[in-house]
Length: 249
Image 1 (cartoon, rainbow, N blue to C red):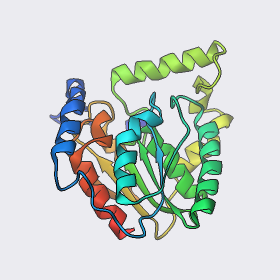
Image 2 (image 1 turned 180 degrees about the vertical axis):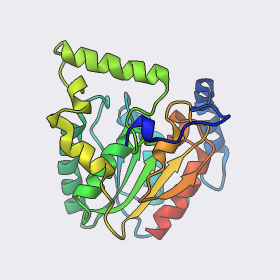
Image 3 (image 1 turned 30 degrees about the vertical axis):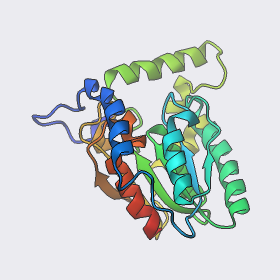
């Protein structure tokens, strides 16, 4: 779906104030202070979880979530991504192999949690390997329109594409948007999710980076939280949703 296909904004701004993204520190402090979530209650037979970071981020952006999941008893695998700027199809292909290995060593299907662009990559994994994905959670992921982002972030996207056109390796290029290299990725990003898959799309109307309406995956349970975009990986409301989902799955 293109940006023009999204509902047009009414009186509200298309995006939450970008300044609101500075809430990250407060959100982290609130999570640590929440005695109902931290430390978490250990769960028997906790399913394995694969974490995928967002645009311009790496696995280190999800270390708090990883630690929390491990304390709950989950086996957690990281994506191996240092900076999420590679061609989407190349990234999904690498994650696909990692998913297969992790599911094999775990002996059971895996829950995949992806933040922002990571959620889009995770959705493609669920479409391609439904037998290996026990659940899907996207955190502020614009699955309906990859470019439904704020102007500063869109400039960063264009800068990355420009560097790729200059020959810098390991980055997506302008051709990824419409070219053959990411044709399968674009197809799977909007394909129906497998029947019976437990999928949840978490979004925030005060997201200062992504248009929250682009996160409303029609094939997933849509859950609204009060969070910044970057803070979804440390937001107590998000963790309460995950606590419920990870028990159900």
